Length: 102
Image 1 (cartoon, rainbow, N blue to C red):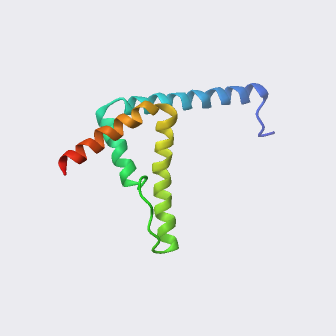
Image 2 (image 1 turned 180 degrees about the vertical axis):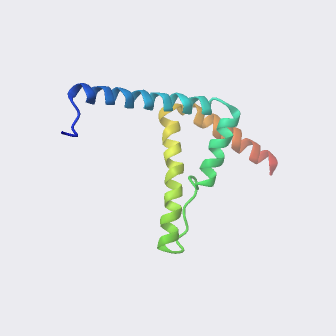
Image 3 (image 1 turned 135 degrees about the vertical axis):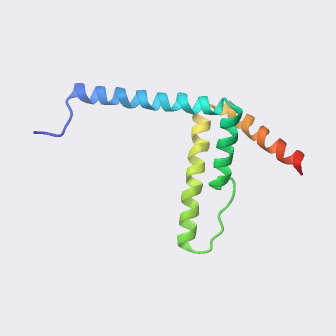
């Protein structure tokens, strides 16, 4: 028995994949549409070091930190793809509060 999909099965598989991707994009836009969602994504971006250069202490440490940073960059890419207008909203919400607190 062959593991290859028939054309109909391949088409159905692709259709399901596109539906999952569309649902994920809808979910992400929903998160970014709320104040709390944007605060959480901002926290994640900071936590993963998306906005800062990684110091080189050792190759292993650098690889670990760059891996974390890559997750943050992936989130930024997702924002830019799915809801770019929310990126500036998120930045303004989080940097204005920080500046007022200083």
